[in-house]
Image 1: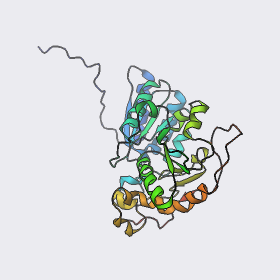
Image 2: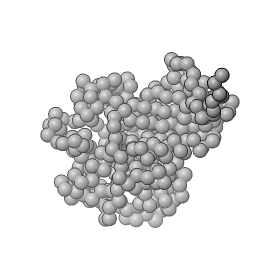
Image 3: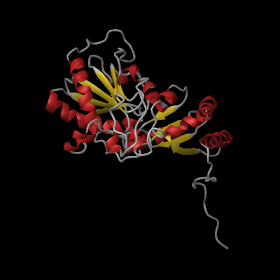
Image 4: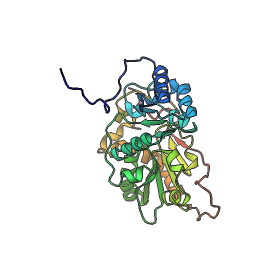
Amino acid sequence: MDPPRDTSLRPLLFPQIYTVTDRVSLVNGLAAYGTVIPYAGTFLNFVSYAAGAVRLSALSQVRVIWVATHDSIGLGEDGPTHQPIETLAHFRALPNCMVWRPADGNETSAAYYVALTSKHTPSIIALSRQNLPQLENSTLASAIKGGYVVHEAEKADITLVSTGSEVGICVDAVKYLKEKHSLTARVVSIPCFEVFDAQDKAYRLSVLPDGIPSLSVEVMSTMGWERYTHEQFGLNRFGASGPYLDVYKVTPSLSTYPWPLQNAYPLYRNLNSHLKASASALLPPSTSGRMYLTSAPQSTVLSNNSFRGG
């Protein structure tokens, strides 16, 4: 007779359930019953199919984790039907729901740590399909605050604020902007709006200081970013089908740029005029005591012919 085995740390598995709504409803029930911390996985775009069940999780204050992969146009050939545009804006607006979009391994660890220790709040952890670089200045201690400075610079002309796969692009943009346009940039990552908003005002202003123009970079809807940045660069239309490096491109001439600049160049080309305009009109230090930088210029979006379909 085999000795009994300790199964206390083994994951609880259940048969394949084919609708996302069924999965989320099931984990809601498991969380409400207790004794386990349930999670479910799907593409980020398909979490929208279970929006009602996700809302019930937040309303019921249950600890549920959704591992939502393929989080942007970077998922590639599956095309617009699978590429989330409005999804993050939707769930970021949901009360009592943490939405994480990590940029590297440390930020992913922070997302899981906060999700596991938040007993009355569900979490969506949006992960990329493509490989991402490990950021030099990311740490678990910084990431669990929901936002932190990835690259600091004295006398910066602009603050680039981003999440997920675009943080690495912004870090690469720092050198390019300095060499080609004499602009000094600092970079901020905000993997979780909700956790960052919960930090004290002094910390938030240390990450997003007054007196420096700021620009958000996220390849999906710009809605909500006006709370944090003066200008927004995003994608307020549907995506395109093709290899992810091609989907990120704007023109075929990008093939002359070495990786990762060929991936980042579309951002540089579209943003240069906006960066220069912002840097030439630095705002005076704030005396209003406001929580966020809140000017409201027109968001910069990729035009309908920006991507070449595959």
